[in-house]
Length: 112
Image (cartoon, helix red, strand yellow):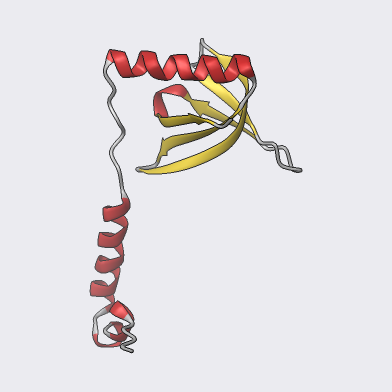
């Protein structure tokens, strides 16, 4: 069986500038653009948020943050329409709260 180590075997022969450039290139590949939604998609997303808030069901919210995406799991505990934010409360033993900008939501999934 062939056990290839990828870039690890070549880094000893590379200049540090090349290694840094490879790391930067790999991080650029993982970056995503902030999504721009049309009116219909925003309305559907708003309906899902309201349905999850009033039914108090657990949700998974994928959020755009610093050119990457992060996921939060919990219950929508509060909606602030003036600041366009919602509060996700984790159901862990630690009970962490996360304020999320509504404009940065990529995807919302309601868990049954």
